[in-house]
Length: 289
Length: 333
Image 1 (cartoon, rainbow over the protein chains, first blue to last red):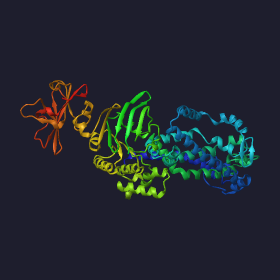
Image 2 (cartoon, chains in turn cyan, purple):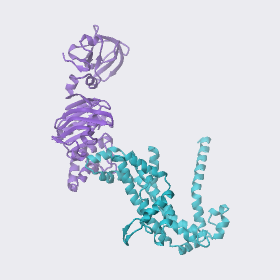
Image 3 (cartoon, rainbow over the protein chains, first blue to last red):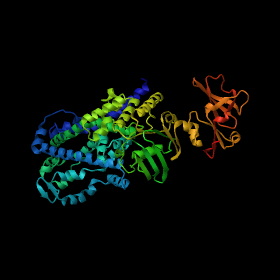
């Protein structure tokens, strides 16, 4: 290989390693710190030792973290809230995207533009009006009739099912699917819902995976502001609210790192399961772009 | 079964009129080819018959029943697309039987009908494969198989051979014609390839800008083109067109002569020029000559020809084989 090509290759790898490090080091710091007592953690934080499992290493922070907060219970809440939201979101958003792409109805363009416009509205600006709405909405559940959605699982699920990004992702993907398939299935006698379920969705694996991962991150990581506003009871709290348990009286950084390491596991697992489809979708979008 | 009537059919896309007031009868059991250049509206007509596009005005009747506003699946038609439109996630058997599965037929019946279609199209060994594991010709057969199992009154083909290579296209032309004589259903076939139209059709409909130029059997169109457009469109190589002095000699504005009716003259001819290009096809030879005052004139000469590019040439034609046109319309002598 000529020298200038080798130098180019080396530079490229150096750049990639540098970018990878930017992403890996915070996670490494979190995991390594979770194994150290607070004093050593603070002393190490000003040197490279912060990223190395050296010194007084133990799982004591994990045991203390489990003693301090009902971690598995919070993880269960978060996974359940996130899981139900993802399933409902994938169904409803893909269905509305299907309607935008394949059905003909008056005002379609305007409605789609309005949905896209909600992209630029930050959640913080609608949080208070949304709180006022859910506070006065009735609900019939297993516990009978309630006059408010406050303190429940569904108050953390329903407002987040439909979102512009997921609809937009599905719309973009569906637009690239051959229209002939839809027409052929209509001639074969499929109803619109059958076209959706038996033809379009089976061909949408990559985008379903992408939307699921993005929605998972959106839901799992951002369960802070809204749950603080609408959930007072421990029963319905997600993992992010569990962090509050570690900031009382004296802050235990080692325990916080242990807690964060534990609650990161579901995210990593979810990503690992869907990463192939996720990468395929990103790659194919790039090619089609 | 399967007589199709289009009555005063009209289609607008926004303000653009693509089919202005079209009437057409497609006889039961016929193989009708809609042919014309790109953008002439032939695919639109097919899609209107299929119910994939909404009619702006007019009626579509199949066996006397008005199907203008029926859903595609209720019209008793089947369509084969240019892209084949096979479902990539289904096997060949599932693709062929999809319509029957949707109709909730018993599994045994579906299997039986899929096997029947597979037998006709020689697909028995491929039934468990996915479309991506098939060649272009095999995919085309699966698409036809899917149409056959629906037992339609009318088959619609939208340029089904245009994605195949030349030799496979020739083979599929024969197979489709044989299939038509075997199942005797009405077939409406859209193509821009006049060779396909000439070799497969019982009836050809030549379209130009949404209007019908001429309807007839292939030889009628070839021997008696009613318009200059049809004369130019049907036949390969194209008909030679003359205006000016040559046409005036035959008391018309435009004169057409087929390449096979041109002859080399050794005692001086009506057209004098030089050879620009020669194509030796074996059984016959095509000579493209530059005649002063005209475009290239093509002559088809039987057998070999001992002449070279640049040689002077004199061409003539017999009075019995001329086509005369005034204002683009045929005038018969």
